[in-house]
Image 1 (tube, rainbow, N blue to C red):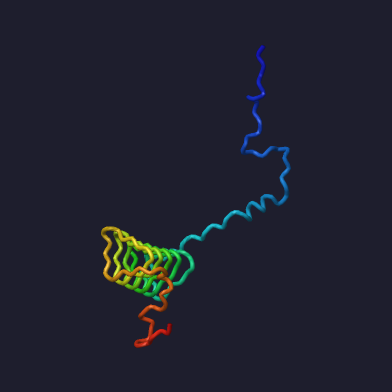
Image 2: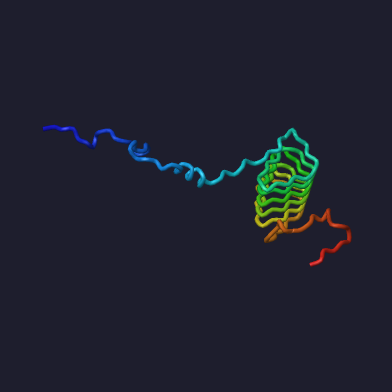
Length: 161
């Protein structure tokens, strides 16, 4: 009259491979080789550093230090306690601290704690309420190809077009 149903019998779980299914040799190697490469973490200049000189990277950098020199990066984040005296150039720039010098970036964001003394050349810009800014703002379609900084050009020199 009553019988045990086969539906309620335990079987292999969906996440477990069946014991009788052979796994092809090298199949795990293929899966591992096709996974996307992870992006390296941002380089961090800590607050106990004072850097004199230019910094250039194709990666991301977070500056919490005092820097006297130009910085070029992909993504540049200026920390709240950081001070940069020089030109900064990056695809994406977030300023939380102090920058004295020209800023050139595709995306530039000044947070409420930002203090910028210098010109900003950008493609897009966001300035939060509370940010201090002294200088001019200029929109360019490609602000990164602006050429040499004015300070490096020889006085009276004219670039040929």
